Amino acid sequence: MDTPALQFRSNAINELVGAHARELSARLQAHRLQLFPPEAKKTLRRFSSLEAAKLIGVNDGYLRRLSLEKKGPAVEVGPNGRRSYTIGDIQSLRVYLDASSKPDRKYIPFRNGAEHLQVISVVNFKGGSGKTTTAAHLAQYLVLRGYRVLAIDLDPQASLSALHGVQPEFDVGENETLYGAIRYDDRRRPLSDIVRKTYFDNLSLIPGNLELMEFEHETPKALMTDRHVESMFFTRMDSALASVADQYDVVVIDCPPQLGFLTMSAMCAATAVLVTVHPQMLDVMSMCQFLIMTSDLLGVVAKAGGNMGYDWMRYLVTRYEPGDGPQNQMVSFMRSMFGEHVLNFPMLKSTAIADAGITKQTLYEVSRDQFTRSTYDRAIEALDSVNGEIEQLIRSAWGRG
Image 1 (tube, rainbow, N blue to C red):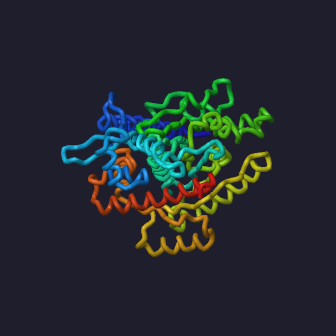
Image 2 (image 1 turned 90 degrees about the vertical axis):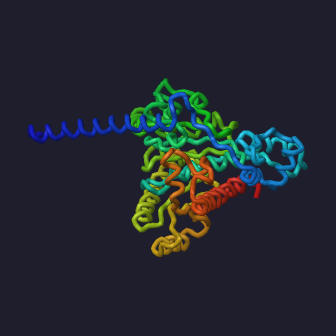
Image 3 (image 1 turned 180 degrees about the vertical axis):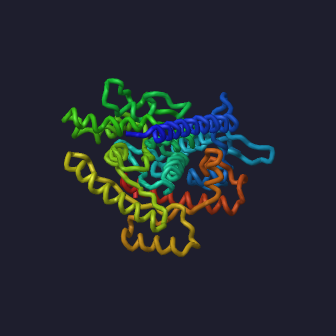
């Protein structure tokens, strides 16, 4: 039994933590309002003709000629004669080029009926591995390349949502996370009612907040009270995704940093798994424990009828510093063990990505002139290399080679 002094300290710390939480939430909201006034909506910048040409896969001179001949969408031309493109303009160009090009040359990469939805779960249960940064940049890269993408924030901390202009405490109400579509009671909603459009054309978002923890709490109760649910909890996310599958080519899931029922559900719904890892000994040791636990738990799920077949599984080295000797040794160590399961390209540690994050943006959302050009070019080259390698894995899974 607590003594009065201990009880006082317990109450005091509860009050202190609560006060800190309220103060921090208010300050974050004030910071958000300073960046984005209440009436404002987050928007995406315009892209240069060189960037647009690279994204579409054509020569910049060809886009200039189309513009001069007034073919395709009308684009904005600045006083210096430079053309700039919205993401909508880029997609309209793809549509125009598809209609006017040879049948064997396609610019719109949407999957066809014979190609299954790609569901990529980005996982690791150690914080700081770059999981959310990886998921956000991958989702946006695929959209810029012309795919239809659904990003799912499965982390109660909701950093992926915040990056896309959705503040979890203020913008996400009850039953507006994935939990609303996979809960066990009669308040379950269709997933299509929860999906939100974003300022990226063809990128939709299912936001997260603390409500997601309800699934972690309710699932054990459901397992004890309903034997039917016991064999079905891990299929709930898969079933929800099936209801909107025809609207998307790729789903990117940012999983929480622990191996609970949400992460297991995401891994059961996945067609591919991307494990992020920082090349330091403690991080790799943590990943080892994660892999052991994952293998054991998913083995139980597989025996219960869960689908554990993946198109691919890869380890992505994140926050990599090429000049760091111990990191290079750790990367070599991983490659010697896992071989082709380690992506060829690592994601470099970059101040450009960190600086963009201060204003809740990814590197794809900010223009080159906001950074030292060499810093920006180095980071964007690393991002494009990593995401391009993943895009090729997706295309190979569809049989496109």
